[in-house]
Length: 248
Ligand code: NDP
Image (cartoon, rainbow, N blue to C red; front, top):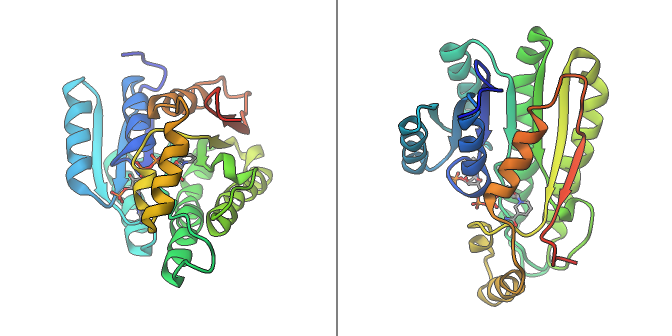
């Protein structure tokens, strides 16, 4: 275990699988106490046990980022336990790709609620603590599609581009107060993300496309996020676009 993050407290949303789970493990391995937030509590408990068996420190707070009470509970529980929040990794997300004509309204709504509104709401709940501390890192997971378009993705493209605009605009308001804001834009990463594409044929087409690439591992993004939050305070990495070499 390294120690660059000793004494620091990190909230990671979407920590029950994929990028969030790998990021929580990576931050814990550098000494951070990690607060694991997602809906699937069993997966979070398993991850916490793994982190603790490696001498790390983890706290599970079951959280639906679309629920305001859960957001408040996540922040209050973290502050009760640790008294500070140094790093917020807004990673929870889902990508139910669909042609607009085939999508039901709930799919469109949930995509924006989880990927964008939940991220804004949790950031709003955490920023006052970081302002009081005069320091903090907010790392927002957008996507390559926050910058480039893909078909069957209008709602997801909009949400992820919104994350990028939110991050850059937020930075204008908080950078001078010591708060770093970064947007991470992964390309294809091998996780459960594609399992939630509602239409079977579209799901299998997208899986074939991603399967034809040497996709990134969740650990590749975790390492990138850890790099972003372990720089000297004067360094502010604003944006990282990271794709498999063969995703062109
Ligand atoms: P996973 O499906 O493995 O992880 C998604 C995570 O989000 C899960 O932990 C899930 O937990 C959580 N989540 C979903 N809905 C909610 C909710 N309402 N409240 C709280 N947590 C929620 O996929 P990835 O690891 O790939 O995704 C992580 C992020 O990376 C997402 O924002 C995604 O858009 C982004 N991304 C992924 C890419 C990829 O190719 N995989 C590419 C670009 C960006 P639970 O179900 O337990 O709540």
